[in-house]
Image 1 (cartoon, helix red, strand yellow):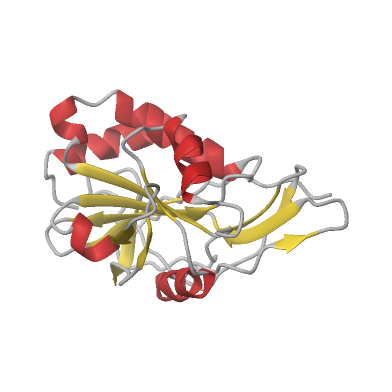
Image 2 (cartoon, rainbow, N blue to C red):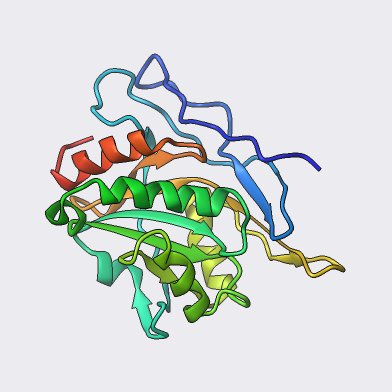
Length: 226
Protein backbone atom coordinates (compact mmCIF):
# COMPACT_ATOMS: atom_id res chain seq x y z
CA UNK A 1 0.00 0.00 0.00
CA UNK A 2 1.35 3.38 -0.90
CA UNK A 3 1.60 5.83 1.99
CA UNK A 4 0.26 9.37 1.79
CA UNK A 5 3.01 11.79 0.90
CA UNK A 6 2.89 15.03 2.87
CA UNK A 7 3.51 18.14 0.78
CA UNK A 8 4.09 21.78 1.65
CA UNK A 9 3.23 24.93 -0.28
CA UNK A 10 6.00 25.65 -2.78
CA UNK A 11 7.70 29.04 -2.74
CA UNK A 12 8.12 30.34 -6.26
CA UNK A 13 10.65 32.92 -7.38
CA UNK A 14 8.35 35.19 -9.38
CA UNK A 15 4.82 36.44 -8.90
CA UNK A 16 3.68 35.44 -12.38
CA UNK A 17 5.11 31.91 -12.25
CA UNK A 18 2.39 29.25 -12.35
CA UNK A 19 2.90 25.86 -10.78
CA UNK A 20 2.97 23.07 -13.32
CA UNK A 21 2.42 20.56 -10.55
CA UNK A 22 -1.21 19.89 -9.67
CA UNK A 23 -2.79 19.95 -6.23
CA UNK A 24 -2.53 16.80 -4.16
CA UNK A 25 -5.40 14.44 -3.58
CA UNK A 26 -5.76 12.27 -0.52
CA UNK A 27 -7.21 8.77 -0.72
CA UNK A 28 -7.96 8.10 2.95
CA UNK A 29 -9.04 4.69 4.17
CA UNK A 30 -10.66 3.95 7.51
CA UNK A 31 -8.38 0.92 7.77
CA UNK A 32 -5.25 3.02 7.33
CA UNK A 33 -2.90 3.88 4.51
CA UNK A 34 -3.51 6.14 1.55
CA UNK A 35 -2.49 7.14 -1.94
CA UNK A 36 -1.89 10.25 -3.95
CA UNK A 37 -3.14 11.46 -7.30
CA UNK A 38 -3.26 14.83 -9.02
CA UNK A 39 -5.86 17.55 -9.44
CA UNK A 40 -6.22 20.22 -12.07
CA UNK A 41 -6.06 23.65 -10.42
CA UNK A 42 -3.03 25.87 -10.89
CA UNK A 43 -1.60 28.18 -8.24
CA UNK A 44 1.13 30.78 -8.02
CA UNK A 45 3.12 32.31 -5.22
CA UNK A 46 4.28 35.87 -4.69
CA UNK A 47 7.78 35.12 -3.50
CA UNK A 48 8.55 38.31 -1.57
CA UNK A 49 5.58 40.68 -1.76
CA UNK A 50 3.04 38.78 0.33
CA UNK A 51 3.35 38.64 4.14
CA UNK A 52 1.54 35.30 4.12
CA UNK A 53 3.37 31.97 4.21
CA UNK A 54 0.59 30.03 2.49
CA UNK A 55 0.35 29.71 -1.27
CA UNK A 56 -1.15 32.78 -2.94
CA UNK A 57 -3.65 31.77 -5.62
CA UNK A 58 -3.33 33.18 -9.12
CA UNK A 59 -7.11 32.79 -9.44
CA UNK A 60 -9.35 33.96 -6.61
CA UNK A 61 -12.08 31.34 -6.36
CA UNK A 62 -15.64 32.30 -5.50
CA UNK A 63 -17.00 30.91 -2.25
CA UNK A 64 -19.22 27.90 -3.03
CA UNK A 65 -22.98 28.40 -3.10
CA UNK A 66 -23.55 25.44 -0.78
CA UNK A 67 -26.38 24.65 1.64
CA UNK A 68 -26.14 21.46 3.72
CA UNK A 69 -27.02 20.40 7.27
CA UNK A 70 -24.82 21.65 10.07
CA UNK A 71 -24.00 19.58 13.17
CA UNK A 72 -27.30 20.55 14.80
CA UNK A 73 -29.18 19.13 11.81
CA UNK A 74 -30.26 22.55 10.57
CA UNK A 75 -29.63 23.97 7.06
CA UNK A 76 -26.38 25.92 6.87
CA UNK A 77 -25.93 28.36 3.98
CA UNK A 78 -22.17 28.70 3.58
CA UNK A 79 -22.24 32.03 1.74
CA UNK A 80 -24.86 33.69 3.91
CA UNK A 81 -23.58 32.45 7.28
CA UNK A 82 -19.93 33.32 6.64
CA UNK A 83 -20.33 36.54 4.64
CA UNK A 84 -17.76 39.12 5.63
CA UNK A 85 -15.64 36.67 7.64
CA UNK A 86 -12.39 34.91 6.91
CA UNK A 87 -13.16 31.25 6.16
CA UNK A 88 -10.87 28.22 6.09
CA UNK A 89 -12.61 25.53 4.02
CA UNK A 90 -11.63 21.86 3.96
CA UNK A 91 -13.30 18.81 2.38
CA UNK A 92 -12.79 15.46 4.13
CA UNK A 93 -14.41 12.79 6.29
CA UNK A 94 -14.31 11.71 9.91
CA UNK A 95 -13.08 8.13 9.50
CA UNK A 96 -10.01 9.29 7.56
CA UNK A 97 -7.01 8.00 9.54
CA UNK A 98 -4.40 10.53 8.48
CA UNK A 99 -4.68 13.77 6.53
CA UNK A 100 -8.13 14.89 7.73
CA UNK A 101 -7.58 14.70 11.51
CA UNK A 102 -4.02 15.95 11.14
CA UNK A 103 -5.06 18.97 9.09
CA UNK A 104 -8.03 19.89 11.27
CA UNK A 105 -6.08 19.21 14.46
CA UNK A 106 -3.22 21.46 13.38
CA UNK A 107 -5.65 24.25 12.51
CA UNK A 108 -7.30 23.76 15.90
CA UNK A 109 -3.99 24.11 17.75
CA UNK A 110 -3.14 27.21 15.72
CA UNK A 111 -6.55 28.72 16.48
CA UNK A 112 -6.10 28.05 20.21
CA UNK A 113 -3.02 30.28 20.19
CA UNK A 114 -5.03 33.29 18.99
CA UNK A 115 -6.92 35.72 21.20
CA UNK A 116 -10.70 35.29 21.56
CA UNK A 117 -11.14 38.49 19.56
CA UNK A 118 -9.03 37.11 16.72
CA UNK A 119 -10.79 33.74 16.73
CA UNK A 120 -14.18 35.46 16.48
CA UNK A 121 -13.16 36.86 13.09
CA UNK A 122 -12.36 33.43 11.63
CA UNK A 123 -14.57 30.51 10.61
CA UNK A 124 -13.23 26.99 10.06
CA UNK A 125 -15.62 24.93 7.92
CA UNK A 126 -15.33 21.18 7.34
CA UNK A 127 -17.46 19.67 4.54
CA UNK A 128 -17.95 15.91 4.69
CA UNK A 129 -17.13 13.82 1.63
CA UNK A 130 -18.77 10.79 3.29
CA UNK A 131 -22.20 12.08 4.35
CA UNK A 132 -23.75 8.62 4.62
CA UNK A 133 -21.57 7.88 7.67
CA UNK A 134 -20.87 11.45 8.77
CA UNK A 135 -24.19 12.24 10.41
CA UNK A 136 -24.49 15.62 12.17
CA UNK A 137 -23.89 13.95 15.54
CA UNK A 138 -20.85 11.99 14.33
CA UNK A 139 -19.44 15.12 12.71
CA UNK A 140 -19.97 17.24 15.86
CA UNK A 141 -18.27 14.71 18.12
CA UNK A 142 -15.28 14.48 15.77
CA UNK A 143 -14.93 18.25 15.34
CA UNK A 144 -15.21 18.95 19.07
CA UNK A 145 -11.88 17.19 19.63
CA UNK A 146 -10.21 19.80 17.40
CA UNK A 147 -12.24 22.97 17.71
CA UNK A 148 -15.63 23.37 19.39
CA UNK A 149 -16.34 26.41 17.21
CA UNK A 150 -15.57 24.56 13.97
CA UNK A 151 -18.48 24.33 11.55
CA UNK A 152 -19.40 20.94 10.11
CA UNK A 153 -21.50 20.50 6.96
CA UNK A 154 -22.92 17.22 5.74
CA UNK A 155 -25.57 16.15 3.25
CA UNK A 156 -26.10 15.53 -0.46
CA UNK A 157 -22.79 14.28 -1.88
CA UNK A 158 -23.71 15.51 -5.35
CA UNK A 159 -23.90 19.03 -3.94
CA UNK A 160 -20.55 18.59 -2.21
CA UNK A 161 -18.88 17.42 -5.42
CA UNK A 162 -20.42 20.27 -7.39
CA UNK A 163 -19.22 22.83 -4.83
CA UNK A 164 -15.69 21.43 -4.75
CA UNK A 165 -15.16 21.12 -8.50
CA UNK A 166 -14.90 24.86 -9.37
CA UNK A 167 -12.26 25.16 -6.64
CA UNK A 168 -10.09 22.57 -8.36
CA UNK A 169 -10.88 20.06 -5.61
CA UNK A 170 -11.87 16.60 -6.78
CA UNK A 171 -14.23 14.61 -4.54
CA UNK A 172 -15.03 11.02 -5.45
CA UNK A 173 -17.73 8.70 -4.16
CA UNK A 174 -16.67 6.75 -1.05
CA UNK A 175 -15.78 3.11 -1.64
CA UNK A 176 -16.42 0.39 0.94
CA UNK A 177 -14.38 -2.80 0.61
CA UNK A 178 -15.37 -6.34 1.63
CA UNK A 179 -14.08 -5.75 5.17
CA UNK A 180 -16.09 -2.58 5.58
CA UNK A 181 -13.16 -0.20 5.26
CA UNK A 182 -14.16 3.13 3.73
CA UNK A 183 -11.98 5.00 1.26
CA UNK A 184 -12.92 8.55 0.28
CA UNK A 185 -10.70 10.29 -2.24
CA UNK A 186 -10.74 14.06 -1.88
CA UNK A 187 -8.55 17.10 -2.35
CA UNK A 188 -6.24 17.59 0.62
CA UNK A 189 -5.94 21.37 0.38
CA UNK A 190 -7.37 24.04 2.66
CA UNK A 191 -8.63 27.23 1.03
CA UNK A 192 -8.78 30.58 2.82
CA UNK A 193 -11.56 32.96 1.74
CA UNK A 194 -11.00 36.57 2.78
CA UNK A 195 -13.78 38.93 3.89
CA UNK A 196 -13.03 41.77 1.49
CA UNK A 197 -14.54 39.92 -1.48
CA UNK A 198 -15.51 36.50 -0.02
CA UNK A 199 -13.14 34.80 -2.45
CA UNK A 200 -10.31 32.30 -1.89
CA UNK A 201 -6.89 33.96 -1.97
CA UNK A 202 -4.70 31.43 -0.13
CA UNK A 203 -4.13 27.69 -0.20
CA UNK A 204 -2.55 25.30 2.30
CA UNK A 205 -1.50 21.79 1.38
CA UNK A 206 -1.46 18.69 3.60
CA UNK A 207 1.51 18.86 5.94
CA UNK A 208 1.32 22.62 6.51
CA UNK A 209 2.75 23.26 9.97
CA UNK A 210 0.96 24.68 12.99
CA UNK A 211 3.39 27.61 12.95
CA UNK A 212 2.42 28.51 9.37
CA UNK A 213 -1.28 28.34 10.21
CA UNK A 214 -0.79 30.43 13.34
CA UNK A 215 1.25 33.04 11.48
CA UNK A 216 -1.28 33.40 8.67
CA UNK A 217 -4.39 33.18 10.84
CA UNK A 218 -3.13 36.09 12.92
CA UNK A 219 -2.65 38.13 9.75
CA UNK A 220 -6.13 37.21 8.51
CA UNK A 221 -7.73 38.10 11.85
CA UNK A 222 -5.95 41.44 11.83
CA UNK A 223 -7.11 42.20 8.28
CA UNK A 224 -3.67 42.15 6.64
CA UNK A 225 -3.92 42.20 2.84
CA UNK A 226 -2.47 39.38 0.73
